[in-house]
Length: 594
Image (cartoon, rainbow, N blue to C red; front, top):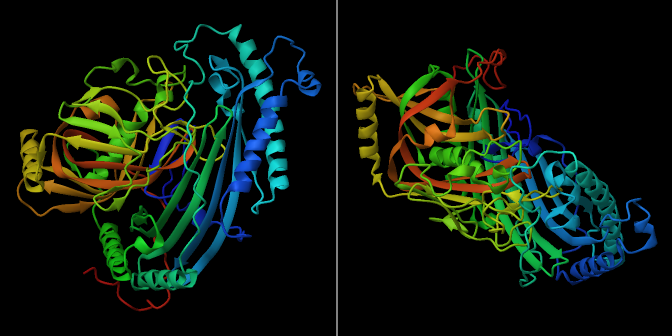
């Protein structure tokens, strides 16, 4: 699970997902400095070492006297039927600033290998049931192209992985003799055609570090003018990476990844102890394509002023009634309420809630809504999409998947873990380094055939509130994060954390900013209360934490009107705002919000 500074939300297990605007906790910790030893070049040595060691391992593991003696069971299948090497070769620039000063500046180069070993057969192997993690062993690789050193590291990781796989395969076979019949008896691994792509050299990291340090100092200095903002941060992350994937099936692909992200964070505290924060995130495919300094300053000051307004805004009471979710809020809503429950592995296993497993071919959302996941889409209306990729983390080509058509459920997001009725991957096997890939969202895209403009959507909100006898409806303008629980033993619920919420009064009074609101509910009820959408789609870029770790995702959706949404109050907090004013504000009145 990914944590966001200021959000006191914890996870019972990775089966609970958590979506945030951007992961920034790493900026709060000391960062190791690992300078690149040489510039990235053609990956010939790296790939040759991977291929040679894989071929050697497949030819010898399980056949030599040493590996045969690892088990007393002569019937156990000891030869791997599948082996893969996945290497992430990444160079990253990370800079953080607070109140006009640099707090961290590092440029790092890392190479990390995931070795996956499978014993048995695709029908049943060492990853069965609760043993999925047994297939992956992770190892850092040498940064320079020393073939002998790379092969040695891969050899060691492969041997460790083989031992773990063998131990767990024997456990799987034993468990199958004593456990009850499984609800879904699908295979443990899908059979796919080998894939090859052009091998692309790792991109070199471009960007003047000194210039960006100056820009971040200048940006973060803007927070000096806000007395009540007790924490601020402006952080830049630029990542140039190539991922290489080789498997014993013959797959050989590389995926270049270039992303630049700038994040501005501010925190304040109301007099009653409630912690408040705002976040602005900007993402592009390179540092050069991030917004200019004037645009960033304008966004920062608007965010800071809104945070000052939130400090004195009234706390909302629990509410159950009509609401409009902006496009960004709607995007997070669909990611949490719907998207996670359409991931393939959530349909299989005794622990899974399986909300929509038995509803294939049936209407699960109002008929004017369609939902697809398209990781092949690089941008939307000029905005880069975080969930873009060309090959997934199992070496399968990314594919657009039409999940819901006119309200009707058509399929699920599949990795190479089969489920009943779906035996093949559709290019959505994703996971962070060190964890087994699972079916995950990439770019979730929501479309509608019942669209109205913003003014009409607002008029409909007021009309619905009057119809229900409510003095107001709610408008959710900005959102920070959300999480969903998908395990069977826990309530099938979701929570979305808004940042900016307004009461829209039916008597014509001006809208009123409120604080302390979170959206809660259950998926099937929430999805059937959408009555109209806006005519423009917005993008939410974020990072999503679940059972296969943290992966970048995007969601695209129009604003939507729901007839009924349930909110609850956020935690109040007990700490008072800082007693001593910040330096420079002694005897100075609080800055007026303009």
